[in-house]
Image (cartoon, rainbow, N blue to C red):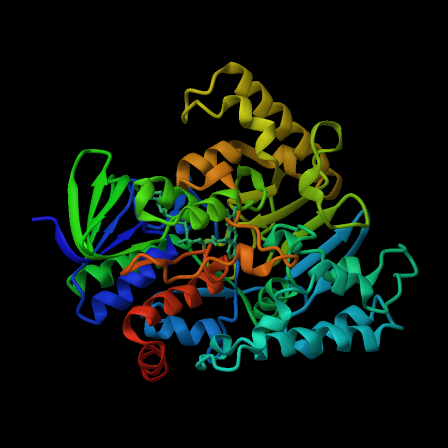
Length: 499
Ligand SMILES: Cc1cc2nc3c(=O)[nH]c(=O)nc-3n(C[C@H](O)[C@H](O)[C@H](O)COP(=O)(O)OP(=O)(O)OC[C@H]3O[C@@H](n4cnc5c(N)ncnc54)[C@H](O)[C@@H]3O)c2cc1C
C-alpha cells in the first residue's frame, strides 16, 4: 500500500517544490509531514480571526521577469498569488537610535536615496552595487542558467562583514552612523553573524533591491497551491506523520513514522535538517566522518517573536520592514543575553488586502540564543511550566519597551499577544535549537558548512534551506538543484525556462 517512487521527508517549501517537480515528471511521490498542515515556515496561524505569518515576511525578485517570478511561473504560483510591492523608496527602513535610512528598490534608486544621507559616498555605493551584481552573475542559477565554470566559489570564502567594513565610506554627518552599518542593517535576513559569507548577503540583498514583495493574505497560499498541484499530478501529501527512522537495504528504503506506519521507496529526499535526518539512520548507513561533520555544524541563532493583534484602526499598515539597532554595530547582535538583550528588532505589519491603511497584526522579531531557554528543553508546547511563562512575559515586556521608543502608540494598540521562543520553532518545524535558518554558512571554511544535495547513499538526497541557501529564493533554487541531480539539471532548467 505505502509503496512510492520517491518519499520526501518534510513539507516545507523545499519538500513541496521537489514534490511538485517530480510528480509533474511522472514520479509517484509521497510527502510525509509531521504537522497537521503542510508548509513548515510557509504556514500561518490565526488568533481571534487574525492571521500571522510564521516564517515569510517578504520575498525578493518577484517582479515579472525577475528570477523568483520566473521560477514560480513554472510552479504555477504566479497565477494564484496576489502580491503587494513594498515601498519602492524604502522597502526596508534601517534605524540606529533616532536616525532612519531607507533601502530602496531599483539599483539606481537605492544609490540615490542613500546619497541623500551620505552625499560623499557615491563611489562606495557604486562599489557596493557593482559587487552584489558581480556576485549574482557568478551564480548562474540566479539567472536561470546552467552552472559551468564554478566562478561562484571565489565568493564563498569572503566575509560579508569585512566587505561592508572595508568599503571606503563615511559616516552620516548628523548621526555619526557609518554607511557600512546601514548597508548591513537588515542582516537579520541571514542571521547577522560575522561568519556569514559575502555571497549569502549579496544574493539576498540583490533579490530584495531588485523587487521586494509581500503576499497579500499570507504565504500559506504557496503551500496550499503546491499541495493541490502535487495531488492533481498524482502525488500524495500525508500530514501528522513524523518520520522517526530511515533504513536501507539493497537500494530500497523503509521509512518509519511515529504512528508505526511503514513507507517503502527506491528514492528519498530529506527536506529537513541534515543532522536530524542522520540521527534517524542506523550507524552503518553513513560514513562516520560525514556523520561527525554534519552533527558538529553550528546553526544560525534562533529568534524571539511577538505576534500582536492590534485593535481596529489603531496601528498603520507599514509598507516596509523596520529594522532597529540600539548601537551603530549591527553585527553579532544575536549574542546579547540578559541585561544587554534585545539589541535589535525587526517590525513587520501584516498584509491582508491591497492598499490597506491600517494593519490587524504586528510581528516583532529579535534574536534569542538557545542557551537562554535550554533549561526547558525537555518540555513540550503548553507544558513548559510557570517559570517559562514568567521568562517569556518578562522578555516580551523588555522587547515592547524597546519597540515603544520608536512606536509609542503600539502598547495601547495591542489587543492580544502570542510569544514564540527558540523552543517554539524547534517544536514547530523540528529544526535543532529553533535556529532561524539552519546551518550557519561560514566563510572561514565554506566546504565544511556546505551540504550537497546528492549524498554518498545512492538515491538519497537533501533539499531545503540547509543545502543551497535559506530563504524563499534560496530554497526554490535549492529544490531545482536537488531535482536536477535526479532528472538532469539541463533538462529541468529547459522545462522551467519554457514552461
Ligand atoms: C522567523 C523567520 C522569518 C523568516 N522570514 C523570511 C522572509 O521574510 N523571507 C524569506 O525569504 N525567508 C524567510 N525565512 C526563511 C524561510 O522561511 C526558510 O528558509 C524556508 O521557508 C525553509 O524551508 P524548508 O523547506 O527548508 O524548511 P521548513 O520550512 O523548516 O520545513 C521543514 C518541514 O519539515 C517538517 N518536519 C520536520 N521534521 C520532520 C519529521 N521528522 N518528519 C516529517 N516532517 C518533519 C516540519 O514540520 C516542516 O513542515 C524566515 C525564517 C524564519 C524562521
